[in-house]
Image (tube, rainbow, N blue to C red; front, side, top):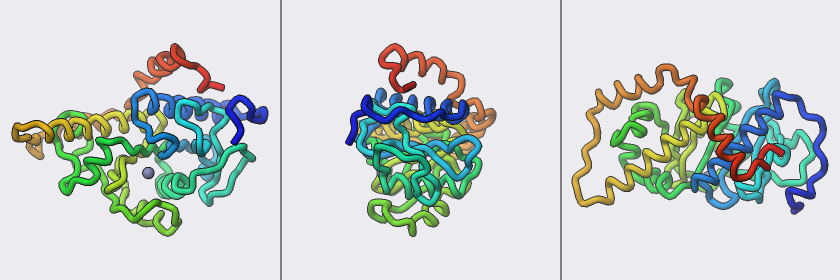
Length: 254
Ligand SMILES: [Zn+2]
């Protein structure tokens, strides 16, 4: 596998696609910075602006803190590589992301993790409980998909699509978390809340005190408050997050 610095020089890339690449590479770096990676496993995708059938995915094998805008691989919804790349495509990544992006034209970024808290709650019979505000963001708004083994068969795509339905977040049972954002920023924001919700749940259940979920009507009211004006989710803090990354290592922009 070539090193990032020895990759072929990139072709001229349209400005809108380059912006999507920088945002997606930044999202990988943020997931790494906040400790949500599983080495080179898991994946985040972004649809290529102006090409609904094309999407960008991580170069398989690179750790998330090595990913750059130009190293992202571009594939289509059928799994064909659109542009020659020095890197492989993660097959399970292709199956999961192409399923969601094909079924949901409103979605432009899919973010999937295997965090300890996410996997732990994904294995709990009751799923996510309305224990804190971050949890209530997903009250009545979280899908569940039963585990079928590693997602290598395109056959699973129809069931992934049916499980997600019209929601923006899904717990993959015995596996991890998945969010589907209308932008990279929204996907990041949803993932942030869902990850914290799972961490809160695991922490609360680990205490010796009885855990008290919020009443269903309060959780629903809170979810409605949070989803009202949700188009701003993640966008307000995004420039600050990029500045935070730039202070540490701005190479995601390359
Ligand atoms: Zn996975």
